[in-house]
Length: 497
Image (cartoon, rainbow, N blue to C red; front, side):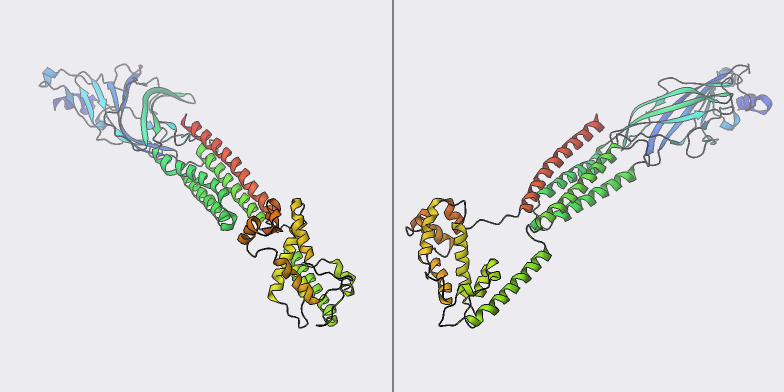
């Protein structure tokens, strides 16, 4: 204890005076840093927190003794408040600036005057993060310490390239430390020049978590968005499917936005990528709405026009019945020339024909409509320009069974029974019609080919708007698929290379 009394007790030692004999010279302090762990790197707050301790070493010329005079003692451990030490503050801190108020930090004073002070703390610092290549990004965060109580002419920090140790460090689950170094710098404020220390850590993010939980699901979801073009309109799920994918992408974009800083200086590429996918999803929904609209569009008339036409047709039926029925007699025939000219000008449909040629009681036989329909189909087929010349046989056969009158006057019975005679020329079902073409009467045998198909089966009615919608669906799929492949591959190559 004689060393404490002789060297540090009383007026022998002043903690406010630099421990050198020539006060005109600067004292040199060697600094090293030992990293214990990386506590946190906050992307949103742009902060870096680590746990570690600094080792300050200098030569105290006022304390030196001969170990032989003190029973061979070569080192003592006084309290930090009992000796001179460099007062440093954390310059880029987010909390307390003076981190070295701990008066229990270990101090080592050797017999030759070499002194080491080892303060440790949690260092919460600000760190400017560049999130452009998130989550394949590298960040550089630093701890900057400065001795504000002494100028550079009074105190200078000295470092070495291997002054950052990691032998006590633990592995962080999100960040990998790929490089670290410490350097002594100068801080100039006005006319004052101070010596400072900068400890830099280069960190590489481990992308597996973000890649599996966010990026890959977004890519898969955006591919599923393209499948909306294969959903048929009749299923009723085309628009709802696209909106579901759009909402899912919106949720993922919200998740990514909550994980990234609110900065407009550097927009992360993953945010731009998800935004582009969101725009593509919106366009696919708009495309689906157009396709559904085209598939439900009437090719000929609107609803108002249909109602108007139906009313006009009904009015003509009632007018015809009112003019014809009073002139009809069961035992007498009627002359078609008595029908007004205005009625003849408008072509009658099958329903109108059935209503026109009813019996005296106003009731028609149920089979008459079917027979008239068969006659209409047959007549339309024979007049078709696509038919082959062989159709003339059936056409002539039909007209041979037509009732003939010199003056063009027919009874109601003849007008109703005439389709029955025509119907006997053709079998009633499509299967029997085909069989009759192959094995049937000579009158129908020449109808093999395109003509027979158009006559017996009829041509399906095609809505040109539906065809346009199907073509738009196919072309849109090709366009959006090429755009999706280009954007996705470019994004992955850009953030990984």
